[in-house]
Image (cartoon, rainbow, N blue to C red; front, side):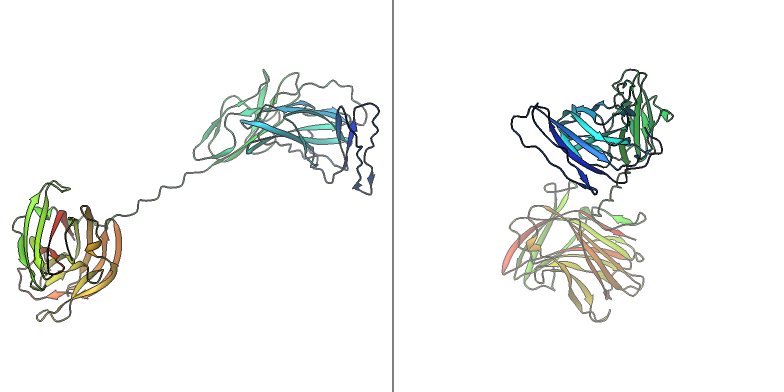
Length: 482
C-alpha cells in the first residue's frame, strides 16, 4: 500500500499492439501535445499479440485502496505493494464471480481505460515511474466483482524477488439489503493467513481488527478485509456493503364493520326471540301474508329465521319483535345476516329500529334497500310528532335487492344515532364489509303512545308486481346500543 498518496490527476496514454511473430514491424503511438496518436500494423497469421497500456502524467494514488466484492478473483501478478519495472505482467483469473459463472474479466490502471480480457489472462502493462493502482474486475450474469492492488513502478529494474500474494478474503454473506442482523464469516484460501478487517469503510492494515470469529452486522456498514501471511504479500482488499433496514410495518387490517365500544350493550340472536308479530303493512298497496319459522339450513348460528311471504300488487309484510327496554341509549348498530332465495321477488327490504324516549315519543330509525330508487333510503317525519308524515328520502348510496346474489349470506350493518329532540343521524351502512357513508340528519320523532323505553326491531319484505312470493332467511341478528 502507498499511504498518503494522491489520486491520479490526469492520465495520458497510448495503446499499441506488438506482434510476437518474428519479422513483423510495428510502431507504438507517439504523444504530441497531450493528445494520443496510435498506429497499428495490419497483418495476417500473427501468432500472438502483446497488449501494452502506456500511462503517464499520474500523481500518486489515494491511500484508500479499495475493492468491490472480490471473492473468486485471483491476481497471480503483481502482488499488492510490489515494485515492478515497466512494462510489467498482469496475470489474473476467476472461476466464479459473485457465485455466478465468469463471463469475462477486465483491468485498468488508476483511472485509465478498462481493457477487456477472458476469464484467465496475462497481459503486459506499461506505466510511468511511481505508485499506481491496478484494478481487476470479473463480470458474470448480472454481477461483477473487483479487486485492487497497488504497485510502484521503479525507474530501474528491481532485484527483489517478488513474493506471492495472499488469497483475497471472501465473506460468507455477500452485499445486500437485509431486515435482520447478519453474522458474517471471513476466510482466505491462504493457509495460516491472518485476516484484518474494518467496519467503517476504511482500508484495513495489519493494525486493524484481527479476525477471530464471525462479525456481527447489526446496522448498515461496509466491511473490508485483507489477508496477511508470512512469505506472502498482503492480499487485495475484499469489500462487502450491508444495508440493515427494519421491515416495513404491517399495515393494520382494513375495517370490515363499524366501530362498537366495549361498553355497548348487545342484544344478540334476535331472530330466536319469541312473540314475533307478523302483519301486512298498510302503508303498502295490495295484500300480503307471511310466516316465520326457525330452520337449521341455511344458517350460520345453527338456527336462522325463515320468512316466507306471498303478496299481491306489491304488498309488504312486516315482521317485528320487542327486544328490550331502554330510554337513554343514543347510538345503535342494526347488524344482521340476510339470505334471499332464488326465485324471490323483492322490491324493498326494510330494516328498522324503534325506541321510545323519556318524553314518551318514539324515534323511528327506518332504513331500506329500495328497488324503486336503486338506493339506500331513510325516513323523516315531515310533519309534527302528533301529526306525523313519514317520508322516505333517497341517499347517494346505491342498493337494489334484485341485484343481491341469491342463495348466499349478505352482512348488513346500519349505524344510527339520535339526540334528545328525536333528530336521527344516519351515519353509514356496511354491505358485506364495504362501507357506504350516508351522513344525513333528519327529524324522526313520532308520538305513537308506545310503552316507555320500548325497543322494537322490524324486518319488512315488500313484493313487486301483481303477485308473487319470496323466501328470506335472517341470522346472527344483533342490535348494539350505547
